[in-house]
Image 1 (cartoon, rainbow, N blue to C red):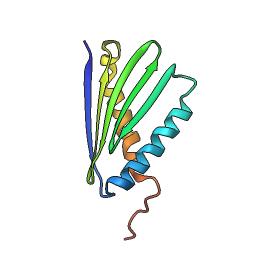
Image 2: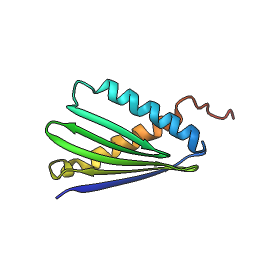
Image 3: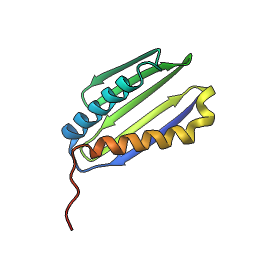
Image 4: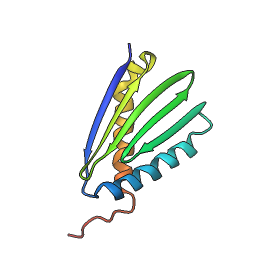
Length: 109
């Protein structure tokens, strides 16, 4: 049985800036892991991305919705990866948070 992971991260970037940062992060991850993936594709329709990744004989799909004040990620894991959902959720959350911080300066005290 497959398992879904849903992550929602608030941000204050606006949809356009958040989408740009998320797109850059996806491209970076695809380049860094190209040798481990059999196939990956990202299709944008407005502020929604549909992703499909095939690795180690398993297909994972995801949808990213970029909103003016939040990023919502929903991933459908195949049953064989469902046992790792907690670890996968942690990695996804960390990467999403990092992508929303790219080029962002921290306020000075």
